[in-house]
Image 1: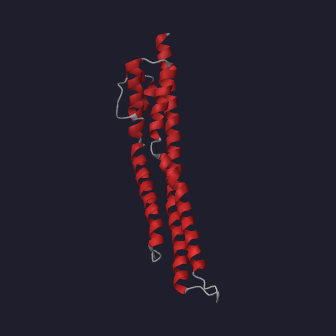
Image 2: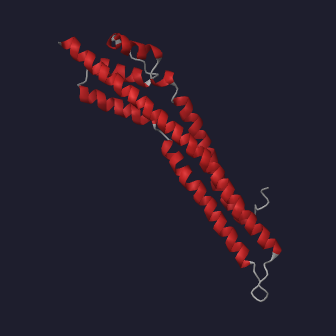
Image 3: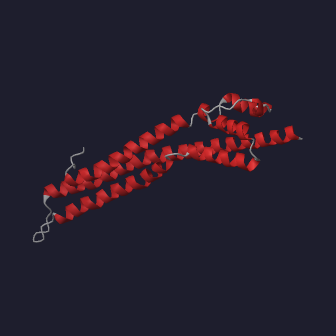
Length: 192
């Protein structure tokens, strides 16, 4: 199937392979990092509901726990607490820009391979007879179709993974923001 690999074909396979490896690594790493226990453990969520979150200890192993630990250590004003929460939310998006790059670059690399393959096809046409060299014709078409297929087969799963992870970060961010607002309300009611 990958008979189009030659000097030119290899120059497309290396960056496409790199895109594939990066996409798989980022998707798996973010799926592990965005587990519920690493963001808002069940005990912390339950304490938000019952209203005793300020009595809990902070946990440096989860985002919610770090926010609570920051609150207990510094007694910040509401804006500082929200700023710290925003910083923690930004950490959830770590590396996801790479998926955006893969989603854009993989099909463009495939398209570049298509153009290169078609140039090979047309450069192999004998000007006097108008008949293409069969070997160059087959290799050029194989390069054109193969790189397009590889580029799309990398970009489509990366797009699905990126969309899922972006939605997950958005949902978790909303939960964190609600938790921070709950902490601020509870702190105000304790002071009153």
